[in-house]
Image (tube, rainbow, N blue to C red):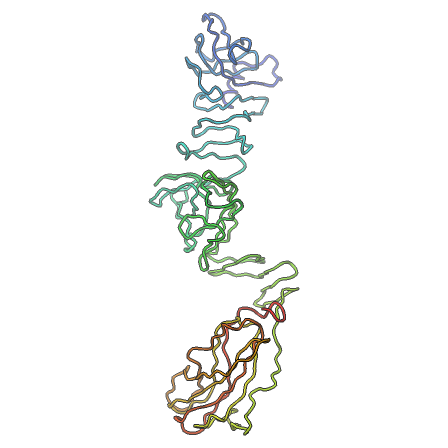
Length: 494
């Protein structure tokens, strides 16, 4: 269009060189009474506007009653080379020398003004018009029919991709970067279970045929079917390659949690906004400072200089391999002073081996017991299985029958009756000589009835067998348990 105006200015230069060129492109018809002698007149807006003088462009002579496109200053017009013997059904949309003119466009100095009330009935690739809904200029891209894509200038960004997947890529598909295809990136369907397919580009903004080039929106709005979601939903890459899921269906770890878009409008012709606020862990990421206020899954070679979970004052920090709890983000535990720690029975047995620093449990005498008292740590995963075991010195291949009577109960409840279990599963295989052995319960202790913190554990440890001759030395009894925290959030509640 700028070339056309340049040519017109050169051929029909205004009388005052310093005056601005003001022109309007309009649609009308040549005066039917024109006798092909002299300059014709043009009629605009039916017969409601006075006839205007027309200057033919080049050697073309307009025909009486012929519909044309005109450019002029409001009084004098030049007839452009569009010719039609009947009225165009959409006068505000007509082709001009391969360029689409949509609505009245006004040129004033260096300004182009588009019709802000224009509603496109039919568009073609390369059309430019004012999108009254988006309040910006729109450029029509590739595609056919409803698959035609329209770029809202200044409000979204596209990138071209090549479809080498072997299947049609449908509008609304989540696309990741694949191998290059010439100067283009090959599109692959995003798969959060595969780090080679989790490097998101954006969302397909059109149907892309097999072996063809199409567009992916990397920033901005995508019109697609959102009828299965709700407004403001955050959408993530789903386990079905290329799919979108809401917060209720986010893939679990170790799959990647990839935030892709937000729902703006719900419906079959809905809209999502593509901000691409996701973290790609594919090759490892190094952070100087990372604030975490939601779930964080890390895989691969990832280095975090400082991790902060919480707000600026009340938080957990991990820095230089050290964990600190700050402000009110602390937890509780017990400093324990048991009144009985490995207390002997009434007969002051079993004997103590001062050479091995161990108690000596005799053959075939279960009356010699060690009495134990303890409580579960606030860091224990409440209700999970626990595994008691004994550390002792094995000097023969024959079995030793270690037994434990115990009570485990919540504070504020009635202590239960004694339960007896055998610690007869060996952790190590004895061959000969002396072996530091661990004997444990085959099944552990079910603690599913425990719900509070600082649950009490009391026990009686003894030997009950006649298979190994003489005394057996034992050093320590302890319990393996699972932790899920550094402590409890309050003194008495986990």
